[in-house]
Image (cartoon, rainbow over all chains, first blue to last red; front, side):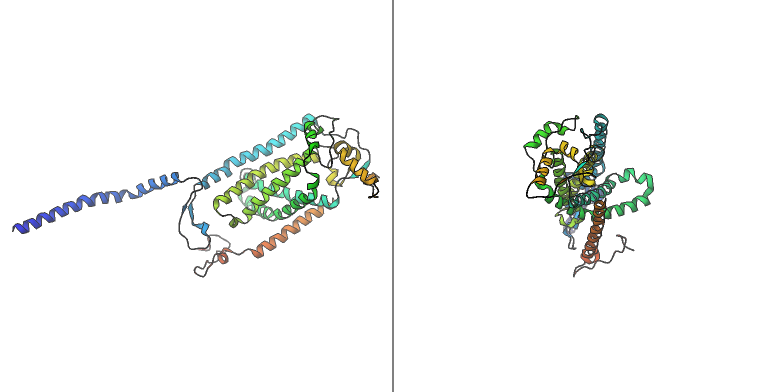
Amino acid sequence: MPSSLSNLRALGAAIILLFAFAYPAAAQLSFRPTAEAVQEDQLLNALQRGDKITGRITIPDTRASSLIQPAGRDWRDFQRSRLPIIGGVAIIGMVALLAIFLMVRGRIRVDHGFSGAKILRFAGFERFIHWLTASCFIVLALSGLNISFGRILILPLFGPEVFATMSVYAKFAHNYLAFPFMLGLVIMFLIWIKDNIPGKLDLEWIKQGGGILSAGKHPPAKRFNAGQKGIFWIVIIGGALMSVSGWFLIFPYLAATVTVLQFWTVIHAVIAMLFIAAMLAHIYIGSIGMEGAFDAMGTGEVDLNWAKEHHSLWVEEEQAKAHGPSDSTPRAVPAE
Amino acid sequence: MKVFVAAVAFAVVAAVGVAMVLNSIQEPSSVAFTTSGARVSDPGHNLIGSG
């Protein structure tokens, strides 16, 4: 009997102990989802930039194992908020500056008037490469701007169907015209690099503001003045950055990680905005901004007085060549 | 003007040529990601598939 009483006490104690341990466990189980949600939030906040939560996958593309990458939110915020501001300030700011410059300075005229004599400035092949690169650039710029601003500016005007169809074709044009653009870039670099090496003469040209700030002042320049050299290097360096970053965008599997891909998209977008702004200045000075300048890429021949005012040393070199014994073909010919 | 037209024409021809070359090289996801251990079905024109 004492033995059975003892067994009963032991059983009772065991039951009490069981409840004592089981109750907290049950209570913990009922709060687990909330507790895990808190932990997940803490985990996300604790992740450093570039870190990510990965899972286990069986397909060959290992990058697909990235489940959560908090840095992606920063990248998305940049694309949607800061990038349009950078682009807007750069492009609208440049247009405003050029408009002010035109109003204040007016068109840059040929001080001595057109002479009627012409001098060959750019050969047919040079103009071909210029227009190849330029025409591609214009389509690339417009289709690229559509990605950044189309949703704000074009979508409300034409509706989603038109905007979507237009954007798809714009993207095709952007992807494929990038290749002739890159070809043009390489050839431009090769044919014009020798005339675009910066020198002491360029410092003097810059000191005098290129002679474009006031009439009658024309600092001496060879084939390309410091301003044109600046445009050349903006095109080459900017174009190279656009090409490399664009290559990663067309072939995203080349990037080692998603972070690398995001980096190149930011480079592509920011350089594009600055590049477009710089090209607006180039287009302005080559067309309405300077009298007689468009002929250089239009017909290839410029007026001799224009050439003497803006590229005096180059004219001397060309005339020396024309009258030299090694070259019997005159480069400056009177207009008919 | 002739040079400009020739340059634009060349750009278009080059872009079409590049498009044809790239499209001939590019594989659909169902081919590219199919392995001996996993077969990925053709998603059709919709990434989600026909369901």
